[in-house]
Length: 462
Length: 83
Image (cartoon, each protein chain N blue to C red):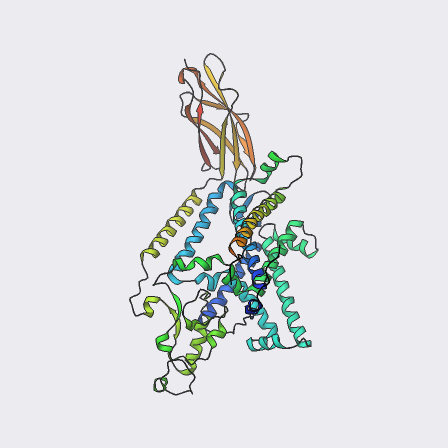
């Protein structure tokens, strides 16, 4: 297959992305973001090391299909919780987006957080924005090799540490680190360690804002949650324009100027390289770096702060701002209902699951002239972290009784057991097939651990 | 193929299929134990649970990737498109 030759200017039209070196800013929102980076990365890197009841507090044990989260153990049967958790996470995102715009993108998204951490390392090794731009252009001399080399060394070490931590959520981390140091990892551990490390290194070190602009699905549909009362980062055009330079101490209005001195700091501070003065753009991740940059300039000029600020479309047009509106109330109500539901069901959750299967081969057996017997296989899953002894009782039919091999059935922590239950009912108490009754499994040591299963008893029809 | 088109083809196929495959694997393997599938299909082969997860994940990724590539080929850079 041949492809027609590309026209010459087409190749030339493509301008390679210039690396964005965001300018370091100081201010309220930068402090907030630094705090978010430290707290969130602290949780990510610290959590696998927390112990609980003598085992790793958070461990997703895939080979045995059990998830441990502090005191709770989740099984594949608890998939509903995972689904609910994901729905809650999505609703939380919608709720905060409707209220305050792209809070997630600016402060909490792993892409933002890790990029911030990687930029810190870049700053320690290569210096501030001007120095980095200069270094980019300078030839490969000794200084460039040393600075670039130490940056990449830091990045790679940090990315590997990130990979180890990630795998540490799936396999006990204390052993993992020991084996990683002695290069004795299994194939899956090696693969996922390198995979996650590589993804962190590539996304936070190189792709950065391109992930938000080209790769992130959320960035594309988040505007659907927006309305005219959503907080956005906006430049006060009425106050700022016409922009222009001026000597300090000159009253801008006398020169026919607005408050924007066109210093370009907001553009230099922007991690996605846009000019917020051109209005809201979908590249804007609402990190508020431009607000901090502009406020610092306004302070120096003795102008009031907030030429660039968190605002809403309605507020910018001088209309009334409504925080509590149907959209917010609906998201909030759904969120509250779901969280309450999950919490209630988690406290009510019994660490025991029982399945009852009727014997398919024999419908019923006549033990003697007086008694009919049905046989059931009972599968017991002890979801608790300690072993329990259970007793099986039956109710719901006159004179019903159950016989098991032993009085008590002992099941180890996180294990299953099968038991044959012979259920007997006096002949004159039942007739025909499908008489409902209940099997009750109860722990001997903790009567609150109890399940009830419905089953059907078959007898001859007279 | 220009560099931009190459980048777009990678970003527009590998990445969304990876996301979908990750999600599909979680949902699928939360409900189905690879051990059960193994016993019912190829009991003579030695496939551990972890290998089962990996086979499933890469299978989902492959299917998603095929779909993404076809979408990319059909929608991007058709013969008459000028830009």
